[in-house]
Every structure is written in C-alpha cells, then in structure tokens.
Image (cartoon, rainbow, N blue to C red):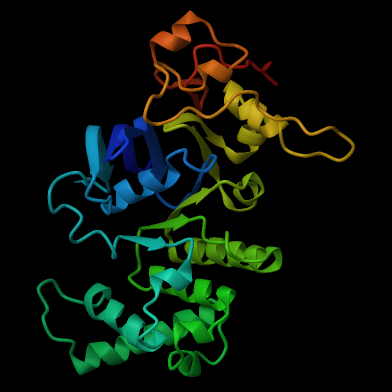
Length: 332
C-alpha cells in the first residue's frame, strides 16, 4: 500500500482470566496510510479497543500477544521498549471517557503542563529539567491549540478543575492534549459516545479539521456507522476479534462484500421498513468457532468456512475482504 506507515499483520491477542483464556483478537490485519482517517467499526466486544491498545503498547498485564507483527513508521511496536519514544508523542490517544482520564485533584493547566514537560515536541532526548524558556513556549503552544479547539478564554480554563468543565469542553481539551505533542497518529476510542448528538457533530468536525491541518492520521474506533460515514476516509469492520472487510467509505457503504457487512448495513433502521436483525448470537471469546467466526450466523457459509479463516483478498483495488464467499458486484 502506498505511503503505508502503520501495519498490523496477523495479530492474535488473548487474555488469561479466571474463566479461562479469552481469544480476543484472531489474526487481525490492518494497514493505514499517512494522513488518512481510518474507521475501525464493530459491535461492543469485537476487539476494537484491544487492537487500539496493542498499537499504543498499553495492554493489561494478563494479555498475551500470541502471534503477528505490528510496525509503525518503520519501528517494531512489539519489541521490548520500542514504544518508549513513540507512545504519547508519535502516537497519542483520545479516550472515550475524558472525565475518567483526568485527575480530579489537579487543575487542567497543571495536567497539561505535566504532559508537555515530558512529551513536548521541543523536548530534547534525555532532557531532565523543564527550562523556563521551553515552559513559556509550551504554554504559548497550549493556548493556541485550546483556541483552535474552540475553547474561549483558555487562560481562565487552565485554572479550572476537570469537574468544572462540561463534557464537550473536557473532550475538546483531550483532543488538544492529543495534538500538542505533534503526533503522526491519533487513536480516538469512541470519543463522542458520552456526548449529546449536537456536541458529537461539533467534535467530529473539529477532529477531522485539526487532523487534516496538522497532518496527523486518525484511527477512529466506533460502533456507530453514521459516525464512520461522517468522518472516515476508509473503514475496517471487525466481528468477534477478526477483521472482515476494509474499503473506501463510499464502497464500504455502497458495495459491501462480506456477508457480515451486508447484514450489518441491512439492519440499520430505514423509514417505512421493518427492523431487521442478524440471526444468532456473537460467539464467546472463550470458545470461538473455528475458521471464520461469523460462519454459524452466515447464510452463505459452507464447510470450508469452518476449516479456515480466509486470507484477505482484494476483488477490486483498495477493497479487501476476508471471506470464501463474498458478495459480487457488477463492474460499472
């Protein structure tokens, strides 16, 4: 892929729990180009957040990477210590719950200052002291970015505690904090879930505009297909720990090829039509079915679907699907 700078290849991750081993990711592959916004969509529990945390290098202690490779801008992210200079600088994170990510004991300004002390783009490798000149430059950069995320009176805002801000204000601060280190990749984990619809739309526009202006790519995880349509250039859909399909956003919604994608889009409510669901249940990660994990619910499944998880194929350029029996579309 041209300009590919994030590559996840056949990544499998499991969790050891009291109930047994949960196989959360199963041979997931994903690639991103520099400068694009990639949507990672799927139902709750499909592995979106686990994949995002694997890229960040912040999986919990009970997680085990069973197989696969993960590279970013030429660096092996699975190598011990490889993310030390990447996490929080080249790759940053916007959480789903901004309130839970702030300390309630310190002002917003104190917490941004602590971030910039260690992650400022002006910080030299090995620098131990927060020099006054850099502190002043970092403050100017902070104030400018808080204005860019449309927060009025940023000097006054920095003196407030997190609980004194609205949900939308806290999320705007989080977006600013993610962009302050001048990252190459921002991972946004369902960043508008806790906000009302009007504020959601504002935050999505803001995130897309700022990422484009600053040359940052965004990996945007969401369970909301409408949100993916609004903000993303390409979309990858996941099901039960496996990626099913990746396509440009227009093709993803207009010409889905994987049966799960097709049934997922068909289940969206439309005016005047009866609601349609997907028969069956999502499999347990403790005892997933062999091969393609969607095959017990798939109307197109055959015996081969139980035997192997098909390698991704590209029926058309830029549109990959992991399926032995994908839907076909006539050429136009």
